[in-house]
Length: 244
Image (cartoon, rainbow, N blue to C red; front, top):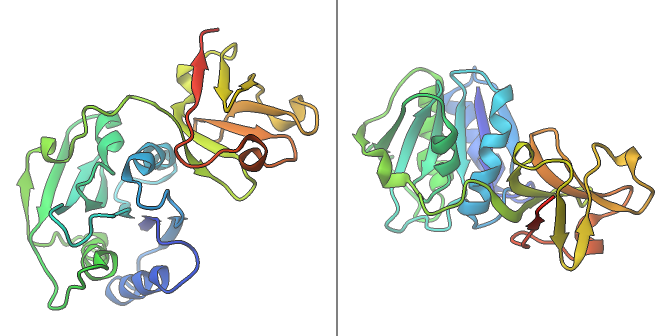
């Protein structure tokens, strides 16, 4: 199984080109489109999304993760091994929360292999996709084990009190694990106070609230409305937590 987590967008040629490489090199692998609209150019926000989605995937799954504004620059490319899963991508902090929340040892390997042709701006297709395809078939490309601190961002908080994703309904996910907040907690966004409800039907039509979404993150929503437009939310909007 190869799982795609990128900021390429659902439109345009990029996702299709990556999947073409995967199909050619690993024709028997299941290719799962997890997310193609991760926060664009924002590995920090994306880092708080990625671990929230992992539990439904089996050991052995290969995650092709590309949120890579530094492509072609000094950042290195590598493979993270954590809890029996593989994560292929850049060392720009994208895997920080996967490392931090992993149970057991984690290993980071810098990818030394290079294809005959490598675009300066599309490593997702030319470098990361072939590596992911090989891993899905049980082949480890030429690489070297490096200290895990090479990819750490220890100054990042345990939970990110910001909006990290807005879905097609206008609901706004935060980088906060709902398990860290009691239900009595009030959230403040753009001068609006939000109380907890466990589902949409528990609040009147048009009312904003926060809840624990299906991936365990705090999410802000409006019953049959768009929280992003009504509350003026975007990626990076600050969420303030009030003591219960």
